[in-house]
Length: 282
Ligand code: C2E
Ligand code: MG
Ligand code: MG
Ligand code: MG
Image (cartoon, rainbow, N blue to C red; front, side):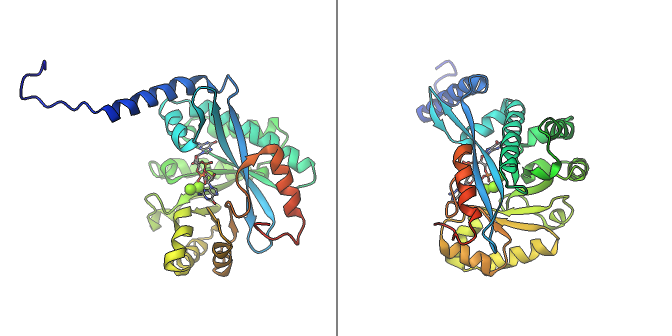
């Protein structure tokens, strides 16, 4: 009204509800860490040929007493926006290292834990030192850890990013490029990255149902040619597993093998898969 008769008004009740929801989430998220509302779940990454678990991806869960269970797809971007992810991410790293040490002491000597790192965390000046210190404090070598990064972390300043990756790899830490195929993915750029593993996004695994495995085969071939190992995300069916093994994908992750579970339960998953005869999905 103040803007006169001809001014448009963009009031949108749906948008306001969204904004209120966002603000509420932010308010709760600020307190979540110190209130102990986070828990780290673990999902196995299975070598397709041997069906052995080689690593576990740490996946953050937030159970808010006010909002209920909130998906990381919802709260991680907010934590990133507000800078909270730096502290939360450091906490996840410590949790994950504590767990991998426990699993290793229990006899799974070669298992690694994979931790997701957000762009803001990775861009922090002391990030490599933080990782180095955390490993030392947990009495672990770098070979216990995989760091998962998305292209968003790497593309802005490739040289600076690669310099950090080289230092991490010198510690024995492996680097995985997460969600491959969903970002910019220029090939010129992919071949310059200092990574060990490329995780092919779930959308390509799903697409195999319609297109057949030929596209996946081409992607895997390319990624292999560049010298990277391959992990397929989101394997849900035996057919997908068979197709992926058929076209030479190294490892896979998905509900077929196990959903992300609390650390305690993951020990049972580990024990289950240690028995060689166990088939995926059993
Ligand atoms: P991501 O790193 O790509 O993790 C894989 C996501 O796929 C996880 O979702 C996992 O639960 C889901 N998933 C695994 N297998 C299947 C399957 O067979 N079918 C389907 N439909 N989904 C499957 P989640 O746990 O909801 O996490 C979503 C994203 O949130 C992660 O994607 C990651 O980008 C981010 N995230 C999770 N935890 C952390 C964390 O500690 N730090 C940071 N920076 N990001 C995190
Ligand atoms: Mg990941
Ligand atoms: Mg991923
Ligand atoms: Mg993904």
